[in-house]
Length: 458
Image: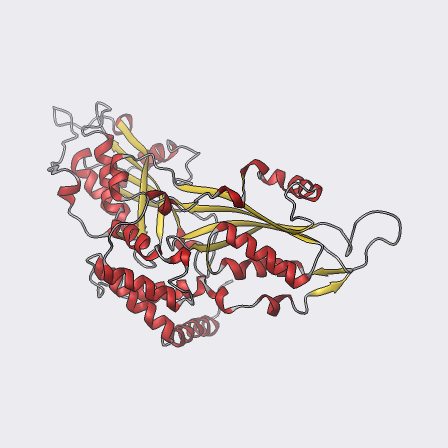
């Protein structure tokens, strides 16, 4: 029937289990797990709670997989991957293994930001000009880029390290690297409640060149950009090394304040376990920045966050006690911004929330700001998307009436920064209460009203 036979299925599961058991006993993994428990306790979490009991191991596994580049060497990949390729047989020109420009475009990578330890996405474009009648296997360009991406990085360092490694490894006439990077811009809980229009992503393009590409004004760069321009890259957006630009949102918030020392020590322990030096200049403030961001998700009190709002159910029936035409009274609050933290991997996810409800007079009885506050309250804590969708639906039913439909659309960082690396995926969850749960026409009417341009904050 197209499914795996039972024996093969169990063999696959056994292989995964055996890998985890061996991985779990390694000293670096154990140290990261201990550090994660300290961080969870700093949030006021019960580390034995069912949802997060295995979180320390899951985080350790994701971090070590995501920084495996520290244990890999470029020569191990490039060695043996150079192939003879003739150039032009006379006359003038450039082609083949002598001077013909080669570009590999749209390599999807991810890396961990050295300033805040959050993952960032990378669209990588690598080009080189062969020399010595030799070309390199194209997949090796991707693998070399991935080695340096799987380390704590900044966009410019990543571009420079990939460029330098390829120049030394394959000895071409020149190498060009262009990185389009996206870093999640996660507001703190106070600013989110005050301003719900915060941008979801910070974007930057970093470039690096060696050999004939070392001069940024060289003609060969014009050829390179021309071959990329239909990919939406503009040379005007390229980040120059001399600009002194700080790209990580955590650095735009100024110096981090005093942080919990046990938690910062835990982050230092994680850095060491990954093979980094916590005293490296770019990493000195990283533990404090991470803890400051992480504390956004500590347990809090609903009544305090909602300014003491006392919930009272609204009766949506007409004065005569008869229910009117339900479909005529469907109202909505669309594109409510949403930010949260996955409790399974301690990685952020963000997007938008759409809420539909019934109102005979077409008026939101409490106003959009309160509805947005409910979304933020349930978002700013360790969560799973299925749970937060249900919690939002149950809470807004207290003041918007019992007929509620909620759709949450979100991009999950854990979908790109672990072994699966599913770039561009988006998750939608759905909750229906009251008549929305029994009326398919009403559900369809609301869902058809959702804006096509929604991309969950991207």
